[in-house]
Length: 399
Image 1 (cartoon, rainbow, N blue to C red):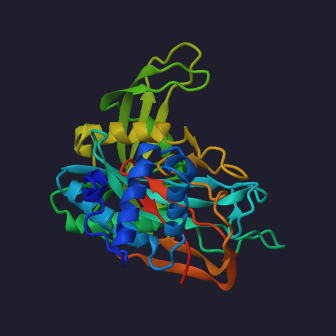
Image 2: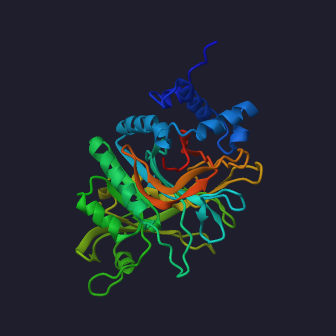
Image 3: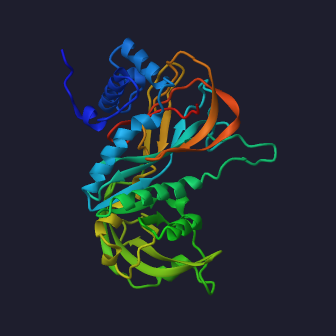
């Protein structure tokens, strides 16, 4: 009896993993992970035979993770082309495998915590409709040396490359305005300079981290806060420990400023959104944002929903914690932006193969950024289900 087709068949239309059985397994895994997005492979699979088939699939060297992602990127591109505005949300997810006997991992925020990082760009409409995952960085950190340094590629590069990939898509989607949205870690002049060099084909909107000094010694935030409010925004802020959900009303101040840079100055727009009349005892919700878009008023930013949706996302991005569930020696955990699904590998029989510890950047022209000179041994086959459409992302490895 023929299997009924479904959304997974449409999402992975055209997938070519070198064998139709692999293609079918990819569609089945996508369906299973979407049915139970917080479960491990064992929890999501229908029986032990399907579990082992899943592990054989993710451990297969005949194809790479971007081969699985390719049809999803094509579907995402199609969905984006039907939108007038798309928010491209860039953020990092921490994959915590601390305490598990897995080689090839690296330090997390502490040297003793072990895991790896996933940095996807997730496309959504201003109406919160998910459109897909655009690309992803995956890496494990090298440990610090005796001098206390970590001799590795600059991790800030992922923000610049994230924007570059969005800029590439902007040229392919002339009727869609793409807005690259990132949190405070992306407040770096190198990203802004790169966008300026590319003539900013995609807008960028970044949460400001640095209260930079302007010409004359004046501070950025104070200069903007002294201007007259140009409008208001209202949004519903979700509840959190010690705080009830509430409606937040903010006054918006906008000012074009020149940021000192090594090559002269960078013209940017600074937006300060400050809560009006917060509840007694509550600290006012205040947001400071930077964007390339020239504006002296709220409407000139292009779309009020863009600012509001971006602010809502930035407000809630650090709240999600997803646990993979107890499997074997322990469960993997996903922390931070919560757009990825971590599947622990503790139930998989150990299979040691020589690998290189690599950092990959995905995109429609996926390339390897760098690889360690010395080969390491990997015994894992992590699969990440990124975004609501449930795309499978294979483990990082080199041939």
